[in-house]
Length: 231
Image 1 (cartoon, one colour):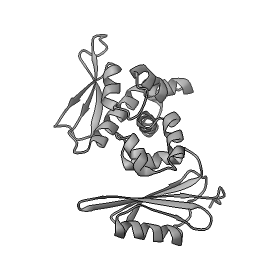
Image 2: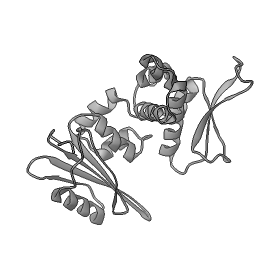
Image 3: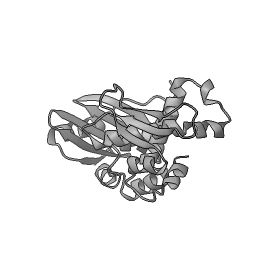
Image 4: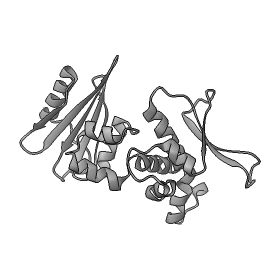
């Protein structure tokens, strides 16, 4: 579905400009400084009128990646009914959580289409800096999370200010605790502010710092054996 949307907007290569996608889909994007949420999809004009204009209202952001995510998410909200149609479901009968998840999944695949992202990831050795350079409108965190939608089997861990913010795998079952090798890799990245890649004797561990003034984030990607036990 994401590819259909991108094809309809004439987008053929990364980086994906969510604002251009919206414009080519006939959706106006405007800034609303008063709104509390990041964005919302609305129709301007008389309800039900064919002359009503689809619009996405976004609040100002200090990061372009957040703005592109917000627009992509609202495009996902507007187009989610297509996914439900494929499933043969009425979106009005689904919970808000399901509709939100569909919008999130569409947004991630609009900014990082699998047919581009997975080959690029494999070709680059899943280098986060390289992928960020190619997919500039996607955040480091979104790129890391999308690695879980691709092969091989991995665990992705994100640290914020020295604490685990996110840890997940694309292997079924409970994710195991961090290994000593992962912890040592993270500690080195956190303190030295430079990428690391180590081999713990079984699988490769890659780590990258995303450090800014007054904020430290680190991202680890560890390849794993496909054998998590359900607990």
